[in-house]
Amino acid sequence: MATTSRRARLLTVQELLNSQREIVPPRCSHCGRDASDRDHELVQQALQVRIRVLEARLAELESRLADKT
Image (cartoon, rainbow, N blue to C red):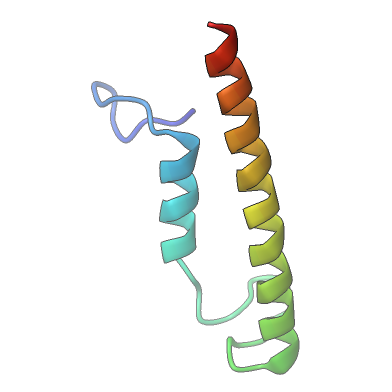
C-alpha cells in the first residue's frame, strides 16, 4: 500500500482506485488518441468493466478474510 505522506495512514485499495479514476489524461499516453476517439471509448469501457470485476473479487476476498478472523 502507498501512503500520502510519511506520517499519514495507509490508503486502502478502494481509495487508490478512486484516486486513479479521477485522473483521466486528455490523450492516451500509449497511442496518442484523445478521449473523443471511438476506439478509445471502447477501450475505456472495457477497462472499467475489468476494474469492476477486480473490485468485486477484492471485496469477496476481504469478506473471506474478515470471516476467518
